[in-house]
Image (cartoon, rainbow, N blue to C red; front, side, top):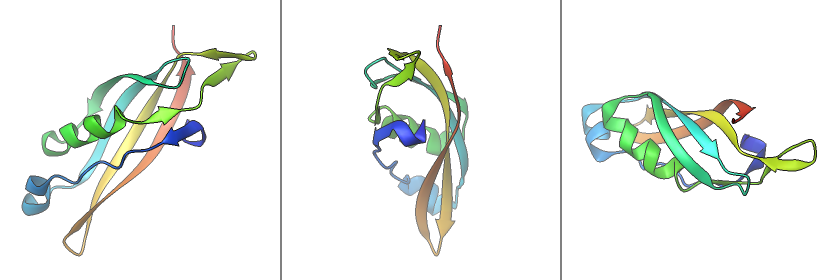
Length: 103
């Protein structure tokens, strides 16, 4: 689904996480409508300090419609956000896991 993403809002690295030295993966299940809008975001695995930031950002993402047999369909995908610390700065990288048509 990464190749279909048209808009990515970068998650803000929470100041509390920076101060605490918190880092790690946040994984979310994202449901994307036939028009490419993010309909819902559900946390799968999380660091409680980072989870809110991830959810807020992903809710603002937008995708090109996913086509199946020539028509747009609603899909679910997992997105992993990797919160990393580097020289006292926070960086967030993302990597979708997989997409499947939603029922």
